[in-house]
Image 1 (cartoon, rainbow, N blue to C red):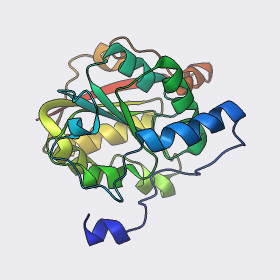
Image 2: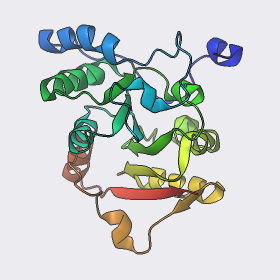
Image 3: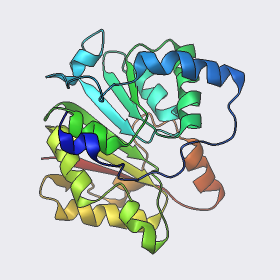
Length: 233
């Protein structure tokens, strides 16, 4: 691991790390499952292929950043047992909920990381990921906080480095300013192309979309989500 990454502080694209006290079931799953599934970038050298992190050595590996309660990640890992899935979530309570649900589902194609996603991205080998999902990230709505939005030129370049050519970066949000922000940044980045042809393409949820609690809240509060898909050229 490089000295730069070892010594740097978090880039702080997320907020608080803990919420209310966990229920005993969630706490137990967190303590027992996290060590088994956590990617240890502090001690392990990055493999030549991310498939080496999984016992079944999948041909494809996908990444979801900030999975919240993990509804989508569990859903996708269940749909595609032959694909390896890596989930990033720094918020302890969300990670605990996800680990409990994943354990109950008996999923064996999952690995997780519970800290700053940029550190994991920098650790990964180039051209090693077959898709990245960033779904309902923290919008940081105040203009003075926009610099903390995860979509920025530096992180898009991180995405471009680890994504295989022809793979997809998917972004969903119900916050218009963040949707426009993401469109503008991806349009300016040479490695990404927005695939929408008509308005239906970004108003229609992704295939087999299970919905999330954040999306349900958006609908209750009268906001319309957008589902953007970008091609890694």
